[in-house]
Amino acid sequence: MRFGPAGYPPEGKDAFGSLEYTRSIGLDALEVGLVRGAKMAEERAVKIGEKAKELDIRLSCHAPYYISFNSDKPETRERSVEWVMDTARTAHNMGAYLIVIHAASYGKSPETALDSVIEGLTVCKDNMDNEGIDDVILGVETMGKKGQFGTLDEIEKIVAELDGVHPVLDVAHVHARGNGALKTEESMSDMLNQFFPLCGDIAHFHISNIEYGDMGEKRHLTLDHKEPDMQVLANLLNDHNGDCTFICESPETSADAVLFKSMFPKFQNQGQV
Ligand SMILES: [Zn+2]
Image 1 (cartoon, rainbow, N blue to C red):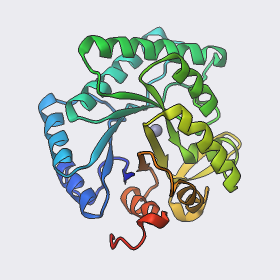
Image 2 (cartoon, helix red, strand yellow; image 1 turned 135 degrees about the vertical axis):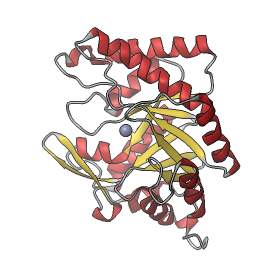
Image 3 (cartoon, rainbow, N blue to C red; image 1 turned 90 degrees about the horizontal axis):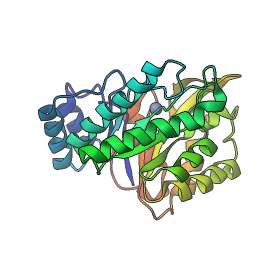
């Protein structure tokens, strides 16, 4: 199991310092935020990837927020393919194993969202095949706002259609979308029982706490809010045999990643900060 921050922790002055900081506090994953643009010079991406490899930090990349495969504007749908491809190319150059995508909003036509997302990601997969990018997984994130495409049920349908696409389980988003759906151990366990068969051996999680209302997600919170109680999740996952990556998206990206790791009974008493 690996744990790390979303984005470069501010404690490191630059990408390389952030990777070193991440390792210094006992973390071994990091999700590079390419959320406002994913083009990166190949040389720089390769250097960041080499640094991460040297430190044994598993990299993933978060694709731009403005991707929307169900937009009523054809040019936005076309550019969404390019934004995914920019992210996939950067991830490939870095050696990042997975990219995380917010696939769509329902917008004016919720009924077309599933087909639109499948269509868009199919084009992305074909382009990646043509460019020889065979080492980057497309991760579709569970979304927290009720106007966004991305329940686990919806993502299950995409995974069934498309090889190389996996769900990314944002636990707080599931909680927010269901008006506090993960208040009990049983509900947390049900979510995992749906997720693990879908994700195969690629179990990529986003963790945080969250404020929510009638429309779902409002904002991410630190783990001490117990919305949901992450100790329950850590207990459930403690004996899980498969590999998992936990990326922390709380306002305290690295401190809460360390805290979540420490919630696992098996990682206690390891003497790490
Ligand atoms: Zn996300």
